[in-house]
Length: 215
Ligand code: B1M
Image (tube, rainbow, N blue to C red; front, side):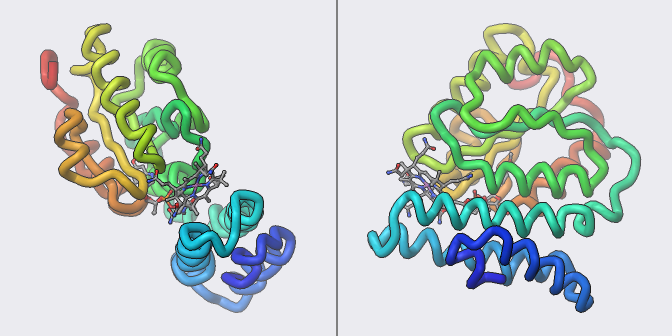
């Protein structure tokens, strides 16, 4: 499977992921050793100019094909809704895979996820917050050092509109750190999608944020 992902062979990735599940391999193992490790190697080869954007794009498509096969298994333990998460990759950033993983893990943990997609402008997060009064968490992904600052802008826009206190903000993505999350005023950081889902669960079991918090 990891070879199929590295080669950007989406159909093969789909077939191999399906075969692995049929053989009884756990979906979490397929994710870690078949998909994530492969994409890590793709990143390394891209960094050293061994491969270029088209190959990376094909690999990402193959990973997405594998992800769609294992998603129902990862979600099999999902329970009733624990809350609603507004999720997106920030403006200027087209990287979708980490965000999609957060969506899968959050859904598995019982959350309703409103996936706003990639290249999400601050105003779009705000509109979604207004359209979904049930939402209490905003999740933002950024993979580029140039797009990370947009996460701060989003939080500032929520503050300016008086909406900050309704939400917890969780951020993540390869260049994002816990320290950066705290610097921009986010409430949480997810080094990976599973940890992000754990954070959501922890928040859901606490009380909602109180008015004026974080303003
Ligand atoms: Co891009 N890219 N890319 N890329 N790409 C990186 C990020 C890069 C590190 C590669 C490199 O140089 N080694 C580099 C960024 C450098 C930097 O900013 N410092 C880079 C670059 C430069 C670019 C372009 C500028 C290249 C160009 O055009 N010259 C361009 C930018 C386009 C844009 O966004 N405007 C670009 C384009 C692309 C593709 C479109 C070809 C493709 C994305 C396709 C897609 O997503 N549909 C792509 C890919 C695939 C990568 C790499 C190789 C892999 C990223 C990935 O999907 N990883 C990446 C190298 C790398 O990261 N090693 C690279 C797998 C994914 C599951 O991991 O998203 O990190 P990740 O998510 C993790 C955690 O970060 C976390 O959970 C996941 C694990 O469970 N997480 C969260 C993520 N979001 C979270 C949110 C949370 C919590 C946790 O809470 C809400």
